[in-house]
Image (tube, rainbow, N blue to C red; front, side):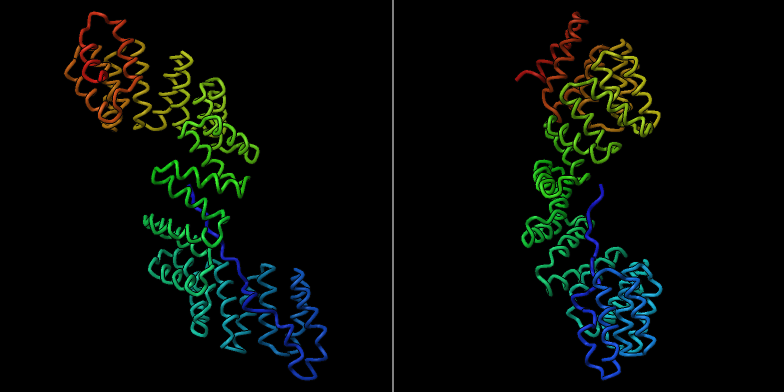
Length: 436
């Protein structure tokens, strides 16, 4: 599951105002072109970048206040997506004024947009050599160093950014992402919470907290944060997918179905959403609906072993053993070491009276996942049916340590006793592991 990083949104207009206020300061020749300059400024501010470019180029030709004009021309080129021309303009501005740190910043932004990260870093550093208090520059450097896996420098610049601007909630969020990538979970969550302290309705921090808790298995806390994120952005697909998954985990199947159906209105072919919906239907014992949705997933992608495995489980519930076996085999064809599908296929063999085949494939599953309670419970039952009580006891002992007195396992033993009444070992196992 991927995480959410805010793009560094700046042309540093707060630091770099267009120089319309300066047009009366440069003598009579500049005064004659005041209207032209103000027209260029106005065109830029109204988003008419191509017109602004034409006007600024006219001013460049007049060679009046070249540093400022080239700077504003560079901004117009940058906004219109002409990166090479923007680069040349900011370079010209710096040629006229090496102390123009704002031009260095904009040139760094140009290089960043062109994925020339090292060049961007160099010009950001030039800007900081002139003005160390540019918190936006520290923030962007932190992001760049993070992308380049230079964590120590990224941490330094995140720290500088938030020390210069303690309200910079976006930086706290992205700093949390860096900590999470380093598996420093507590520090990551502290950063997300700091972002929320500054801006309580900050969607990205809520989402990232949900993801952080989900990744550590704290589904209850994760669910609460995802619900808060969803309340802020109700059409955010990734949040809805996570909610569907967590509702299923907490057995709130109706809510999983509801949120998944809404998510499908946004993306009708989202496999993760369809998967959540199918699992919700299965949890509600609506097996035909679940089967239909799983089959819909396979129409979109026929190479998902989990879907075949789940279809096998549904077919088993619908008493269609032949289809169930086919689906388990399909799952194993795609993933030969899929232990759950092996265990499930073993159960089909058991129901068909093929005890030795059931033991063989379930032992393979057990070798891949020795602590799987289902495989151990099933092996215990198979060995009981095969008159090997010592092996049965060994597997029941392992299973009950992990999942004590599983009611489904007890029901399976009782069913086996009816079919095999002369085998006294069933009652011994029930007395040892299922009776208090």
